[in-house]
Image: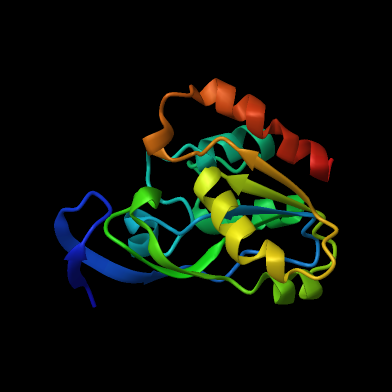
Length: 180
């Protein structure tokens, strides 16, 4: 239920407690791509990266053939078969709208349990700086023995439109190299 409070810009607005989705992960997963928290369009659709202007699915389409023209379920199956897992750094937070800058009251997902259950995950890629910052603040100190490689990639968010899609695909190609 929204609560009226001041947002990060100092304006009054409706701040909602939002919750992330369960991970998309399988025994085949070799790498994990982390966002911060699904945006409004994704939460409404019940799908990761559902905002049509988000570059995530076009990038995954270039790398793994999981483009936005495919049904969501098919994209998920193809990513899983390629060894790619998806999740968010945050389990819950308070946020107005979809912008990462509006996130407050962060609670991280249970990564020690995820990594124990899926030991083949060796690399973690952050979709933008907010996912990485929250992970380093809330999760990394709780990992006893960390054996993962970490790397921040350019955000696929439409809010990060300064970088052209071609440049993002090039930067994200490291993901395919890990699973090849």
